Amino acid sequence: MERDDIIEYSLDTHHSEEAGKQIRKKIWVVTAILTLVTAIEVAIGAMVHQDNPNWWIVKLLFIGLTLFKAGYIVLTFMHLGDEKKVLKYVILVPYFIFIIYLIFIALTESNAVHNTLGTYGG
Amino acid sequence: MAGHATTHVDTATAWGGKVSPFNASYGKLMMWFFLVSDALTFGGLLIAYGYTRHTTTEAWPIGEETFNALPFLGHGYPLAYVALMTFILIVSSVTMVLAVEAGHRMDKKGVFKWMIATIIGGMIFLGSQAWEWSHFIHGTHFGSVELVEGQYKGSRAIVAGEFGEFKSFTVVEAGKHHKKGEVIKESADELFHHFRTAVIAGNVKDGKIKLHDGSIATWERAADEDMKLILKTDGSGNAYKKVIRLTGKDAEKAYWTALNAGKKGTIVYGADLTSNEYGPQQYGQFFFFITGFHGFHVFSGVIINILIFLGVARGTYHKRGHYEMVEKTGLYWHFVDLVWVFVFTFFYLV
Image 1 (cartoon, chains in turn yellow, cyan):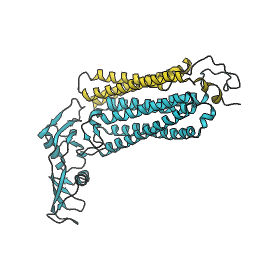
Image 2: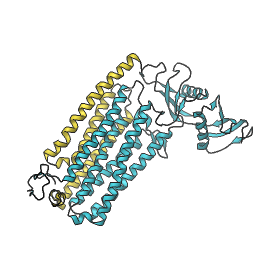
Image 3: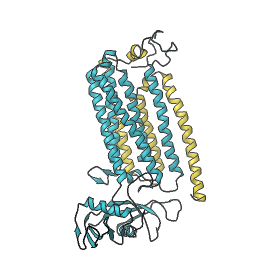
Image 4: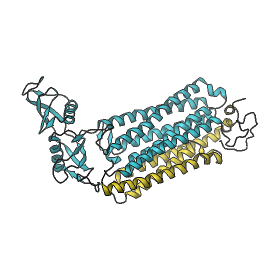
């Protein structure tokens, strides 16, 4: 049997010079976005301290910006945005279900442990 | 680009099940599934870190206070170095995607060039991480201090500021090698090394240092500058509630009084697996494990990239008619970058 990765699907991804120009342009735009977001994060991190009463907003902002960056990396750099829909969801949906569940469990439990230690001593 | 569901796949080329639901090759699909499982591993580690951080009743270290040094320039640059590392890794991810793009045009020279750039970027990142670890392990000249008197007795504080350099030791009591009255002049770093060793062993007391040969000496050093104590645990044993900072003369007095008490463990320098100067024990352990595990991924990524690069250089993929191997290693390399984005946020920013 012939190797499937040699014959069919891999050739689908080939593109022409003109298409390449477009793609490279997109890559540089994404690079600029990722760099800018990182710079903003570091600037905020250095300026706003954790004893600031509004720290929780900054924290949520950091997590939001991180997911924003992650989205660009996965969808553009890893080309997941260009794959078939079914492949996209087979990868993303199980991951998010497990991780959101685990975050929920771990944070609920850890806060309960924290309160117990705070009440009865560690 | 990929994803055109229009391609007809004949049964000879479709894998086992005779249909190709994903329109992707077996190898690429398996790389994706591997990455999902690896992402769950990293997700689990970061969530374990969050769990520990939420349970602890001590103050957790703050990124901009812990990581504020640059090579050759010293302290006072919060997060600058780690931002640089992040940037390096993002750039190497970009060069990788450019290599993949060149491969899609069957541009061998382009793939060759961008693969080299990616490998160099990965090596620079690994080198940066080695520096970061070394700095984390050695710690600052002050270390962290457990206060021995006053209102904050029993509290542990981290110390910011410029440590006054050592100039010389003057022997006041002879030992095996040094005579009384001898002035020991070495470089500031060497003198500090003797000092640090003696402090860890509990051999510094009341302004006198007991050297390794048993002689006792006093020291001469420049004044400390901009010293600041940031209290991390409350001596009363309760949960840490608010940031308390001692500055100027108060800070200097509190620090040197504690140091001169000569008790082992009062000053903690740097980090190992049992203690660290930055905060709770688990902080150091998670730092080593998570950044280490990520660093190991970067290391294996560089090795894989080199192997693929050799394939590119020999023309293996060009003969094959496509550069899918570059695309697959590219997936792994981008994943390493992706993980770093999360490590950066949860370890350094929040």
